[in-house]
Amino acid sequence: MGEFRLEIGSETECQKCGAAVLLSSETCPGCSSAAPHRLTFEEFFIELEQGRMLDARQGGLVVGRSGPEDDIPMYRHFGRGIFEVVGLMQGGEFIVSKLATEKHRDWLEEINQETGEWPADLSLEHSPVASIINTNLLPEWGGLWISYQFVVNRFATAKWLDELLWRNATANDNNVVGQFSR
Ligand SMILES: [Zn+2]
Image 1 (tube, rainbow, N blue to C red):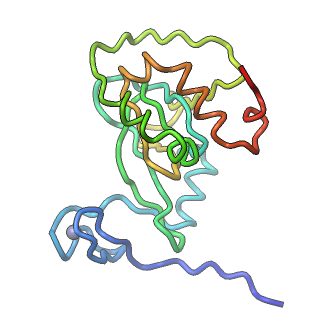
Image 2: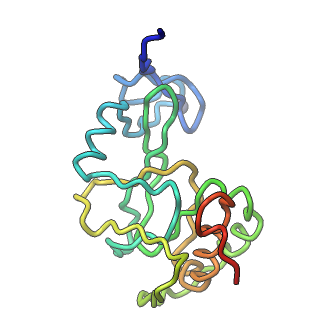
């Protein structure tokens, strides 16, 4: 019988130049840019277990910390048991799931070009397809676990919220919501 072993890698690739960056290294040896914050599987699991990390892989409206700065880190599994920060976002933006991004990429890129005054008071109606990721109770540097990084800006999210919720929820034909019709 095979033994279960989790091999944890020792390096990631630089997000800017692709050079290998050791976990112990603070900067990239190729381009000298600062290495992103990285966690091993074990460290990441502790963050999840302690409630400092939320699983946002299914996508949804992110609420909380609605100041103007991007201050919510997004973590993605780099591979081989290493998670790394791939970007920052803010409350009022919408994370699109990997499946929904693949299905609706053109539309998402189109609406994400739109910018303007953010209405701030998003009215959320109770809906069977609503998916809300609430960061209000996370500690300051708590983050979100994502599988793919497509973030819709706050203006476009406010304008297209119902449609975003709908498209995100129904992109996976195998889930319960995917069987809804309208
Ligand atoms: Zn680099």
